Image (cartoon, rainbow over all chains, first blue to last red; front, side):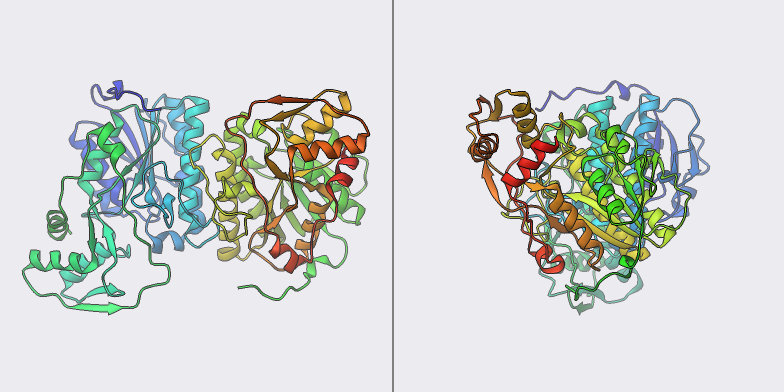
Length: 320
Length: 320
């Protein structure tokens, strides 16, 4: 039952925001945005996949504090009243979560619950970073939020997919039965500065291969498509959702699709040089096509991705 | 990749078996079976939906001990080496798990993990009671174990469905990455003595209404079908799976389907009297048809349900 969008009272004046996974790719961009907007930010990370360099970026900022902790075992925050708890901690790329399957499951379950309890204790909002992986290998294209997904509960990816589905379920349970003011986003493929060079994703691989002058690796014949969202568009969507009382999941992603060969063409144009390609065989677990239906974000957040692939890749190449 | 069935070494001699949810419907029948077979049983329950009377049945037995504890917060067992940890604790009927959504989510996540850790520490086997609810509102009939299901991650039933999917995922993660000797069953609709009178399920309702001489309540026109497994068949399947090295989920259920009106006919024949029927409108969340494909259990366990509906209902009526 959609309600009319209303601005949240939580947006009046500077906020105190705790972000788990603050040293991760998305988390570090949220820290930057909120500090620039005048808010106070408490970052929490255990560096299982986050990077110390992402904490160092803000360590001298007077409104930033950092707590090194594994949020699956508790969030040791004892400071003043929080306005938001934003749960962005989790290994998120297949090489990372497959290296840490139990930790990935725990940060989705105990980590999410610890964040919900902290938000409940402070009367704060709780914001969950979920993922397009909850759709699994989708049988519906593009995916609206009402699609229930097609996930193998016992597959090698299930440590991430099922953890995030569980995280959504417990977030809704705290919203329904304990009145916590919750938000859920499902993040589609996102890229930008500060991604880990070893995250195994195609844009990361291409950026680092291009910067090193190596051939770009293409799996299969390069005709498979992907959709890519630039990090600034995601952060804008997150910021807007905080201001709207909408508690069901919202897809945030860029619906524009590109083949791998089109993506390489974009790199060639930006770098103004010919790039060599090394073709390799398609891995067995290569993710299938996913593409967001973003009607909910358009209607509720007046949000639409604004940064084109060539503009975003240009920034990623410059900013590393 | 099916392997050849081999008998487990764990079946030689009396075993020490810890059962969570020992005061529940299925748990109490497992306690009875294992005690009768000469094993030592440690029961654990917090009585959130289990019944004290199910513990009292065995409290004088020399090989039974009971620990009152919430396994989501730890399993306080400090005794001798365990051979099996069997995780059967969870609210399991819709009225119970919807009353305790957070507790249901926790016993699927933290409760399962505490059981896996205990099994790992003892070098014991870990046996997970999962459910046909992991198939959700299935689009495939009947359901084989390879069907990935159709579950709404944010629906009011998701506290149970997603908790059990998560429980399967973390069980496979401990099996794959930590070498725990695991088993997973997906239990379909099961009935028998010691079900809670208020569990809201149709056979329980009919048994208690018939015993009280009240009209039997039928929702809708009574043409919808259900499959019903008698508890002794389930317990036999569980016992056989413990002896076989098979780590993927196994459906245990009775594939025979009956309409509600056929079910009433069985009650009439057993009680040799006419029973009044009160028709009520179908609830909005009435579970859709589910029916197990039991080829895996037939092949690996040489198992097939043996107790007919009329025989089972006769026992349930006699034994209460």
